[in-house]
Image (cartoon, rainbow, N blue to C red; front, side, top):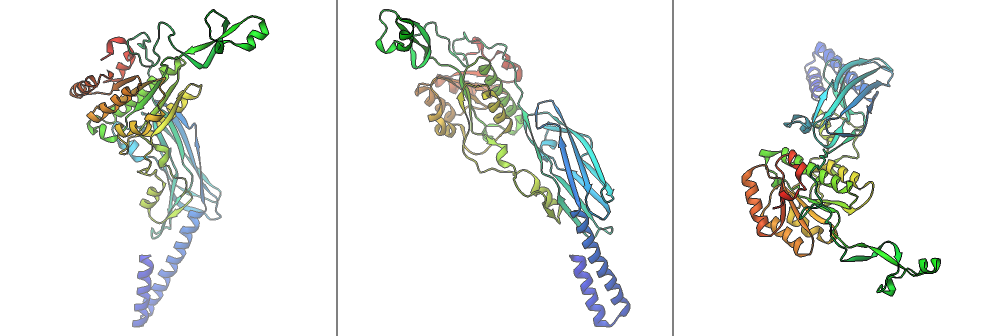
Length: 435
């Protein structure tokens, strides 16, 4: 636009002064600008792209192959095109990086009509997350560099990287306060809403216990048996408020917290017990863009900003995976943990106040905490006064943090454990770790 305005101004001056040679030069320059602008737009509109991603889910340490092909579907040759597959910059530059890239994700080429160029690269996932691969950003323009056009050519792929799961080799159900099911020596209480089977009638059985259908079928009295009313399984509360995770220990502490929750959920699930998850973290899926692809821009910065995931999410509701049994329950929890991000929304005490009505009483509440403040300890004490079995797992990397947390938890008589590194997970359920 600046060149066009300058040429028009030059033409006006040349006409006013009657300089024929300058008028001719201005006309030639104006024609060149118009033709170059039209060609640049025609070239960028004739380009298309395809992306192939080997898979859309992965584990930490896996590699995913990506192939991106740029195609010239126009009738004119494209003198040059610069293609860049956009990746989350923060995930690459942070230390340690969440992903490492092997191979080129940028190419520059000349494409004849119907021509195509392909680039291959691999994503090596160092941490869990919800990673956006793409879209492809195309740049082209005239041969003089006067006009440049930018275009988003493909929709992105989203790769879900599951958190690491550590087997809890020291998981002990016979501990004084285990995480998960509490084993009872005798069935003192039974839940009449859950029938477990039928047995012969015994003297003293109430009439409402008699199984009349079995009695009529066999000709002798039978009674119902019920499942014991015990505490079974766990509901894990993960505190993922950003203020509780100082930068000096990040992202180590937050990733260790997620690994702890995933390992606990896996252990409870393997026992066949119910398990659930409640967290105040942000779901990365809330930040994805669902429109704006296949757009054209005149500025590279605006093009990159338009295709990246949003920086913020207005969600203030907790992320909840209801506590229940089921073959796909663990998968739902791991998917939620893969996408969860630190947030400045609800703190832990607000999370408890928001979800206390949804916590089942027949499951242990396991709070995974990076820090314990007086408000956090009081929230746990509130759960305990409501009749819930409560255990705290503190991700305390430094000793002074651990002593402050243990003092507050002891004052509220909350059972607790400490996790300072991943190796501590192997003995998380042993009785000698009980505070």
